[in-house]
Length: 281
Image 1: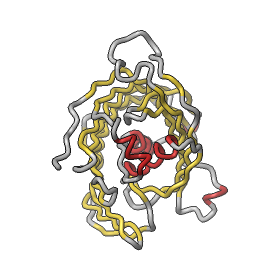
Image 2 (image 1 turned 90 degrees about the vertical axis):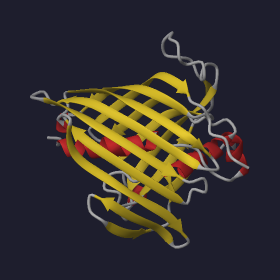
Image 3 (image 1 turned 180 degrees about the vertical axis):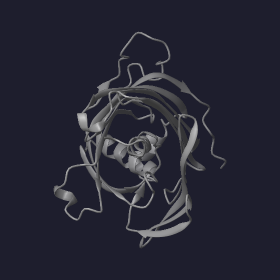
């Protein structure tokens, strides 16, 4: 039977993938940055499927995602994911509140996640990381202070920027090792990304609030995550998969988070464009 913490950890990991901005210094991605918009997006989340082993009879919730900043000062992401989970015998509400920051060079990363269950504090992960010539230095501040040295990796915002770079260049396959601060923030994840053909966005329903996306092109993107603790990771199955339609503006729609025992769908319900920070030359 699935435990509450099992649900928390896996939802948190998927959310870090959703909560990503676009930062890089390559020419192709620099053109993508010209179209990046600060925004707040809301997604209505529903359970698509679950196995008996999952212990989930029903699940629904909402993601509120916000990105602000600029390429010169870095990008800050804040998002909140509230879900109601029904096991068939009882139900409980989880509330995850995450903030991240990555500098414009993709060298330094800060992360913090608090988890509540039925309005009661459950867990906090807080720390920072930096990329060096010989690996990734991680300092975990909460729940217990400790320092780690992991292998070479990129952070979550830089990772997505490289996905967009590949898409702009017409490439369809990309692999990278990533640190995103999820779970216990003590390991890297190997990722495999598949990028589909561009398509034109059409709202799933006739509703206001999608003016920023209507008739804009997006790429269907699927990212698989593998544990790097498994030496045979190249032959192993992914721990989870996240897919979404990604716009050059940095906005995403049609989210799907797939795990071994359950799958969640996230439908974009509203988008609000926020003021864009200006670089001071």
